[in-house]
Amino acid sequence: MQIIACHGLQFMKEPVSDKMLLVNLACGGSYIDAPEWINLDYSTANTAVRKANILGTLPFENGTVDVVYCSHFIEHIPRERVNYFLTECYRILKPGKGVARFVLPDFGEICREYLYQRESGNHAKADFAVMEIIDQCVRLKSGGELGALYKSLKEKRDNNIAEYIFERCGENISNDYHDKETGGRWLKLFKHPSFILSYLEKKYCRFISLLLPSAFREQNISFAEIGEKHMWLYDEHMLTSMLAKCGFTNIVRMPFDKTLIPNFPLYPLDISEDGRPRKGKESMYLEAFKA
Image 1: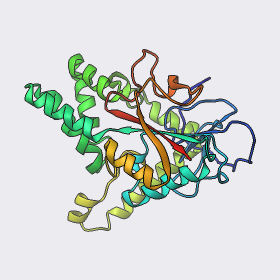
Image 2: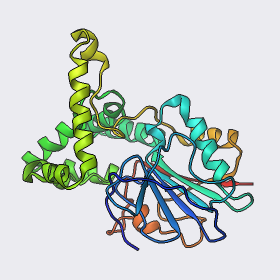
Image 3: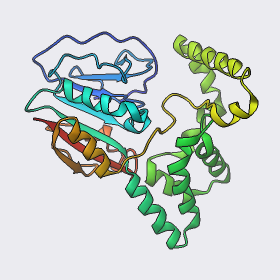
């Protein structure tokens, strides 16, 4: 099994098959390159990842998918469209055996962490918890306050707080700005035509925004990348209730390194090479079945 970073190509609808079918929705930077896996994302630069509008109708027939895996995507969906997305996940799963594994930030855990660190006098860590909750909900530019913090910590070589951030959310600060420093960003633009189109679209949007009143533009227009902003945050109770309303049963919270899904590749999807949770301690893992 192989993990590859993904960004930009086309999607073809999958035929109905009697074989095991596992779907990775909004795969981001991690996916499984194997025949039984279908990896979908909004943009991709590799043929192992198919381009799809994941917020629309999912490109699978009713009851044809064995497993749906979705990591750190639900929080990016506009609040009014989350129910439709979860209903689509339920629709494509096989009756009586289909299961979904959802991974996302746990708002309750982050809040508890904030209170613990503040009351313990660890104010830098408490401040990070606040920024972790709020920044991605309100940022108006790519990277936001978190990006600025990561860059500052890297320059200061503050290993203590950097290790804490890695533990919390899986962000390896030492690598975050490699592309910008080495020119890798520009190499990507010329290597993949889809990146060039995306770059031109951003420039066009910025130009159009200049026609808006400056006060409105500065408060309401965001130039964060697609997938950067959090539209909502959920705790276990909230997500469990939403899944139940969509028809899911036997909704169970799992540790990052455990699953009820046979032969599920916890590594590399949820466990990193060093045995840590790939998306940090802030995440929760819910598995839900289709009756």
